[in-house]
Length: 112
Length: 345
Image (cartoon, rainbow over all chains, first blue to last red; front, top):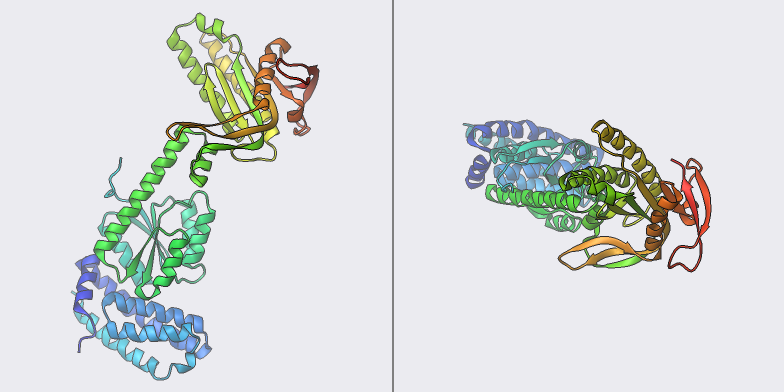
């Protein structure tokens, strides 16, 4: 199953220019694990606002590249942070981790 | 006029690196020059030191968020009119509405649509250019004080009572001066003279509202109120005399005659506002105080003093300005005598 929505990705390529898409993908690959780390650290510290903010950024980046599943998961996390329900995180963090990895793998393949 | 497709100076404010990069790149593709800031505080610093045409602003940021930036912009006279396009996720439109109520011009939803991005940025650029042009027009045809008031409060005819200081300044013996020289030379001299006199009045927060023949009428304390408008008017008068001295020295070098001026200042209640029609109007003031200032100015010839003021003006002056009482005078058309003071240059 594809993790990246082709139409969104094509539009992104159009807006950034084909030569620039690689740099943009590299930035995503660089930042996504950092954001997951921030979410995890915020969960440990029970810092709902940092949790929400990192999830929000990850959601935004995922949506930019058309990584729909990742965006959806990140949005759920953002909501948990917003509603101060970090206790309900459960297995979502593991799912998020996996979604970041599969989206990253696929984006690597889309580099031109 | 510039077309909307000319490049502009853009400021992208977003804490997300992917968003910053993408917006920068997309705007650069459209020919714009782009700077970026990671959050609102950095953005405000940049905005205060560099001119920008349009801001693309994220809402959720550390240190200083989008709402706080909008608030700070509103409070800043120079930045208030700068178009702001909010960039937000599709699920935060309720917050975008709040931003638009706070003065944001437009919004874009992330992920960005290239066509919408171009259209909205160009529309905002166009607005910025119209506003700049409007500002420039106002400043050319109105004084800075009036221009600021017009930009802030809009235009409406009608006046209100204010306490203000009214100044009249005239060139003495202008008629004989102009009879002895070519008309073009007279006009040139007048233009030089007006240009010179404008500056001290404006600098002291006065509004020149009439230039007729060789006369200037200015108001201090309206439309923008300053507690010390009496002193501002007198300081302006002193600076005018000082500048005139330099002007005369220059004229002497050119073999031309001296210009002497008389300045009269009176303070009191006036009706100030815009008079005229919706098509042609001017900021002015009327009332007894205006007449008195004109009479006092007229009296400078007989008194042989360059600056005369009434008692009300004198009472608002600090000790650094020296005045000499010339006693009371009954001016034509007045029921009560006026105590007149001469200001020492």
